Structures are given as C-alpha cells and as structure tokens.
Amino acid sequence: EAGHASLVVRYRSQVAEFEVSDTGIGIPASDLERIFEPFERGRDPAVRALPGTGLGLTITKLLTQIMGGELLVRSAPREGTTLTCRLLLSEAAHDPAVVDPPRPVRGYTGARRTILLADDDPDHLHLLRDLLTALDFTVVLASNGQSCLELAAVHKPDLVLLDISLPDMTGWQVAQALRRAEEAELGAGPGSEESTRYRLKIIIVSANAHEYRPGGDGASPHDGFIMKPVEFETLLSQTSELLRLQWLYETVPQATITAAETLPEISGASVEHLEALYQLGRIGHVRGIEAKLREIEQQDAATSVLAARLRTLISNFDLKRYMSVLEELRSRG
Image (cartoon, rainbow, N blue to C red; front, side):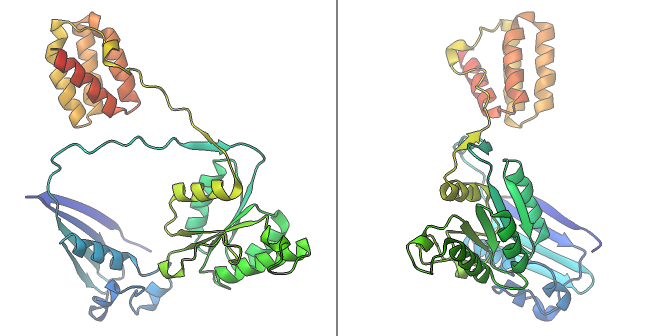
C-alpha cells in the first residue's frame, strides 16, 4: 500500500544479475524456503488476501536452475524483500534473425459481437475490456459467477471468457449453468443433438495448468481453454476460430526503399558520413541520426533525397531497413 519496488540489471564478465527489491511487508525467516514451492505464498494473512497463485517464484527458480544460475532471497518482516537472479549469459555471436511482427488487428467483418468477461480481478477485466473494445466488440464485465449468469441472460453474448476461480462458484459450475440455460431455451435435454449446437461459446481461463481441459469435444461445457496470463494473440486466435471471424488489419506502410538499385548515388563529400550514420544505427541513437542527416544536407544539397528516405525509415523506427540501406551504400564505397 506504500513504498516502492525496483528492478536493477547488471552485466559484467558475461554474468547477468537481475535484482528485484521492494519495501513491502517482508517475509518471515520460516517462510523463505516455502515461497519457492508451487502454490505456496507463505502463512501471512495479509499476503493471502492479495491476488496471485503462488507460481511466479516457483517457475522463476526452475528456469534459473535449468539455465545453471541461482536465485537468492533476502528479506526481513516490515523491511522489504530483495530477490537476485544470477545467470551466465554470453554475448551474442551473431545478429538474431529478425521476424516480421504480425500485422495489428483493427477490427473484424460482419455484425458486432458481444463478449462477456467474468473474473474477480478488476485489473484483468479492465485490461481485456480496453483491448477488446478497441476492436469494436461489445464487452460486458462480471466479477462473480452469479452476475455472469444474470448478465448472460440479459445481453446474450456470443462468447464468455470465464475465469475458474470466482468468489461464489467455480468457472466449471458457471459454464454448466450457462449450458443448462441454453438447453432450456432450445427445449433440448443434455446430450441431445440440439444441445450440441450451442450458439454461445465459452473459453475457460486459469493460471493452474492442472485444470487444463481442451474442450470443444461436445461433452465438455466449454469450447476452449487459455492459460493466465492471457496472451492477447492467443485470445484473438481462439476468438476468431470459435466465432468464425475474419479480421481486419492495420495497413502497414510499404518500405520506402525496397531494392538496392533504387538507392541514389552519393557524392564523395557524403561518403565520410556513412560510417557515422551506420554506428549511430547500431546503437539505435535516433536523435543522433536525425542530427547527422541535417548536417549532411547542409554540407551537400545533393544528398537531400537520400537523407529524406533515411529520415522516413527512422521516423517509422524501421532500424533494420535503415541498416540494410547503409550497408549497401558502404559496400559501394
């Protein structure tokens, strides 16, 4: 409720150190080992009242050990906690392969769809609401199982995103109740042919991998399963599949320079600046690149076309193509 948390990263002699510190309530000495066990969050009532599953440190320690590192904890009640992860990470010998990012989705074709989100974590609800509303979905929020059932009866959603851990009932119970309500509307009994043609689609959400059931088999009450924390790309993929949506994508600007032969010739006066532009690009110093381009234009007006093209790439933060252009120009020189 007060104080701060911090992240410090250090790297020396190929040893990386990640240190997370806070000025929180601290951890009793008797709990310092327990906190690394699965689903264990210590015995302090104040901690148990906070949202969380008790898996974060378990996963972190396992991954650290797999990579040959160590995870250390220092803490004292009412003084805060410091966790330090040390890993031997050698420098990259080669540039990693660059993968073009997926095109951002801006909406979908057809009638507007309604999604009901049921979760007792308000931050999770509001995050997903903002993301889905931006794609033109109608989003309805429920903080418990009973309100989910009531809102579903009123709004007739196309999709329910249903957290397993709700305060008044489990997500499985809510899913079963939603199916029974739909069967009553259809006038069909459980397991009948009509009951397998559910209009409503249900995705179960859980942070516990032991709860995983794929669904969508006609016998389960749900159609899909997503692990927390929810990856938005995964959610969009399942949503499009279940609702048979066709996404509309943002228009990606075409590259200003697409082939080496389209590059203009450069004069001898500007050749000396190519190395400076290249080195500035290697460290991603955008402001430095912009200043250098202005300097080149002032000294050699003939470079204005090239400078304008490079400036466009930088303004789009397309450093990969910026560097490829400079590499081609340097090879000519």
